[in-house]
Length: 189
Image (cartoon, rainbow, N blue to C red; front, side):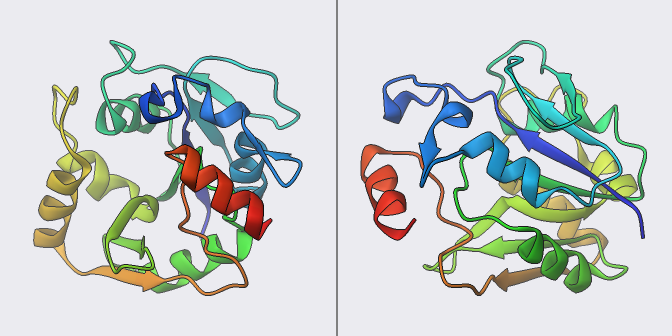
């Protein structure tokens, strides 16, 4: 089944001193490029955030107003999605891979979603594969400030959400939110 990809790349990175996380490099690779490489099988890839150089063919968009949070960014991107499935990724995942995306897509099957869980067992909805129609149906008309967990709760009413611990030599769910996260990522890279 064909799928589109969404990369959420517009956060303020307050815990990292406001640096543009998609531009950060880990192990010599820019975090935005890691996400885009993982989505190489997508028919269309939409990046939500300020435009920046990219060697990938992507469509850029912004949430309105900028800084409205991940659900607002997701809503902006969903307006451009055409495929029946959409893979959503944050732009701060140094070890996400195409293999992890394939695992999520297979696990989703005909259900509303498959999302990753981190090493502590917490949901990571910004590493997930979603049924496009069902995700649009639960996306609020005014998405600014709405938490992702509320969308997950509504999706769960429509069917199973598969939660997966993604295996690999390095944790696919490691996100770089803090200087300590960046140090850990560099040590593992």
